[in-house]
Amino acid sequence: PRTLALILAAGSGSRAGGRWPKQFATVAGKPMLLHAVELLGRHPAIDGVVVVAAPERMAQVRALIGDAALVEGGATRRESVAAGLAALPEDAERVLVHDAARPFVPYAVIDRVVAALDDHDGATPVLAVADTLVRGHDSMLGDVVPRAGLHRVQTPQGFRLAALRAAHAAWPEGDEATDDTQMVRRLGGSVALVQGDPMLEKVTYPEDFAAAESRVQWESR
Ligand code: CTP
Ligand code: MG
Image (cartoon, rainbow, N blue to C red):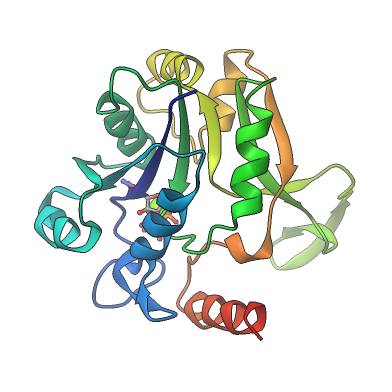
């Protein structure tokens, strides 16, 4: 099936700070966005890459991504995905939605996400929660939240395009979703969990840049 990758790079990276949005920061010798574009674009199951960027950064991103397609994003992640979906080629059947803030995309994760779409409307890589989880009340320890069955959600998330388009069309304006799988679920779609990878950890805060860099060093020892 014809499969496109949608790479989300229209955020402002406010929590990461820095002089420009985090997806343009260099990690392991390249801007994070470029790592994601190259790794997804190189996978044999992916037929093309579409990058979603902020309107004021179109020229900068164009210069970075070569011949990948480029679309203007929106004010929220959900709106950026919607803009990307609207720009996919007519014959696209599946889409992988990925955060540019997760620069290192292992082939094996793409394999698992794509394979799960044979049987499901969507698929997301996850990591099991390892730490003890507790509620806090005014800086005091509250109840433990049993972690059995809890996962941390990563990207790339894969979808049958019709299912994701329907989910976005039905989503109430003003309601914010932090990822696409919850939107597909709300319409009753089936979303598979596949094994994620620590390499896919998102860069969110300033200290995460060094963590990403050190994971690459570790991998290539
Ligand atoms: N994203 C996007 N369009 C938006 C908001 C986010 O394309 N309007 C993208 C970001 O560029 C990022 C991914 O969605 O690759 C995950 O979002 P997040 O980590 O929250 O990035 P930012 O929104 O840029 O960061 P922050 O929330 O700290 O401002
Ligand atoms: Mg954000």
